[in-house]
Image (cartoon, rainbow over all chains, first blue to last red; front, side, top):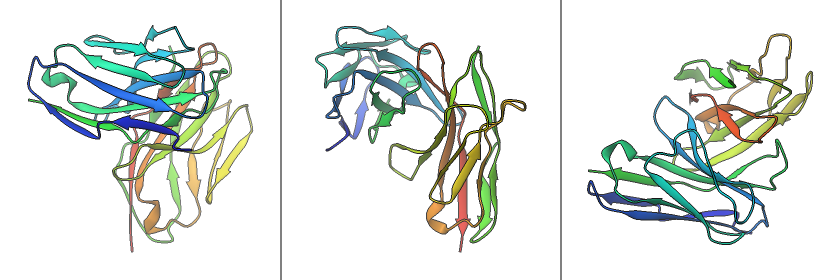
Length: 113
Length: 112
């Protein structure tokens, strides 16, 4: 089991460029999540998908879109990157039952110049 | 709304010292509580959890007790090692939605 995988590991973008962060899990989990981690602020939820075919906004959704491609994959898209989106992005997944432990990927470090 | 507050870091200890990292929470309902650990350059890993009042979670020598009366979930370890150097996050799971709400993280540095 690879668990939760993310690509790329690191990316540099110029302001206004677009990119998609990929996430996949092989644990047959129903729910998937995207977080961003900024110094001194912990992790903040951007979007989540409670089950295949559904997506919902989290705490900080502005500037992002998501796609739950199938049960395994959940992508995060930045249509027009801004320096404020410089962060480390983590994908996570769980079975979807309330209060179930979430399992995290290794993260994508994004720098927007 | 729900929130989690952790003690500010960094915390610097000598090997074999006693560790406490404070965590308090505000929540409606009966959330589950978690401690996650992030080693340098890696993602978050679950360290321990507790699902109801007075439960004690434990793992790798770390412990935390779910205290409803003081709305706290402090992390403790009797004797830290250099390999425990990491960032520790306290989190709660919203009772209705299952979404995790994190504290800001506490950096622990253990010196030999």
